Image 1 (tube, rainbow, N blue to C red):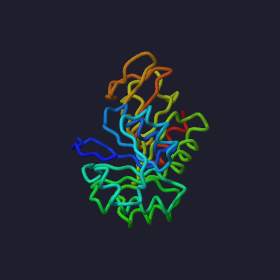
Image 2 (image 1 turned 180 degrees about the vertical axis):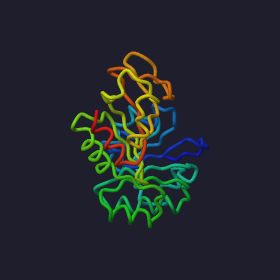
Image 3 (image 1 turned 30 degrees about the vertical axis):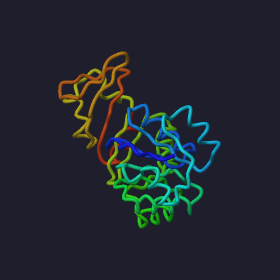
Image 4 (image 1 turned 120 degrees about the vertical axis):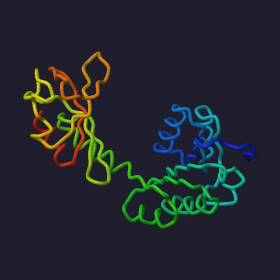
Length: 223
């Protein structure tokens, strides 16, 4: 299936329609992006044809096949191939050869990730590791959500600590005491509120907190 029409700058090709690739493709589609799904499995392509507007069966390791599909017109591509490391690496290489300027790739190990980077991937993600870390932080129930960045910075959603209840953020002095920043407050049945010095914290409030990972972890442990 050739694509002769030009695609928008927000169009994304998602290669490998397993669990990870499908989740990415469906999320992008819901966000309004044009998505081209590619997989070498006829069964997966048939299944996804009812869920995505554009889906094709193709050998993604072949640069010529990708060029015929119009991948050179895409600004973004996501390689969701995981277990077949050879196919994953060759697909990234093929995308690089056709000139896709922004390539994201899933890796299942550090070694796999390093090879992908050297082959042409601009961004490497480790979904199993990321999910594992989030679950580890959330399993005690003290963190409701946790996102850590590469530079040792994290953002968490957590319950307000008892010492802050009934006080404004200025009065409780959480930032000075714990070295974290309260970004916002989410009260049940109300809209999210960006935190200010005079924002009052009530029982049942959720706090969005940012700062160095270790300090954020320490803060969440007191709630």
